[in-house]
Length: 91
Image (cartoon, rainbow, N blue to C red; front, top):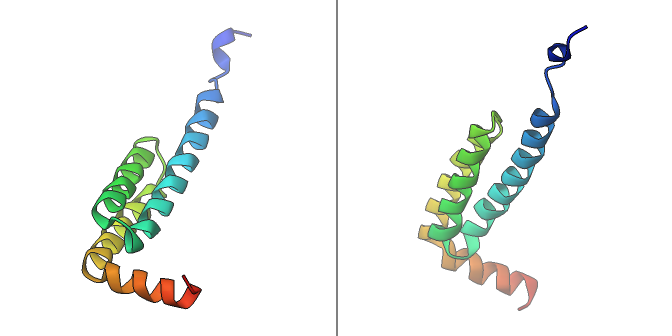
C-alpha cells in the first residue's frame, strides 16, 4: 500500500469551511445593502460571492445575484426602507 493512495481530503474540508464563512458574510452584506451604504455592502457581498465560487462552491452565485439586486433596491429606496424600519421598530 502506497502513501499516495489517500488523496488528502483535509484541504476540501478547509475550503468548505472557508466558503461557509464567505457565504455568511456575503448574505449579511447583501441584506445590509438594503438599509445602510448600499454601494459598499453590495460590492462587499458580490466580492464574497465571487471568492466563494472560486472555492468551488455553487452557492456563491445566488449571493452575487441578490447582492446586485439588493444594492440596486438600496440605492433607489434605501432611505425609505430605513425610515420605515426605524418607525416600525420604534427608534
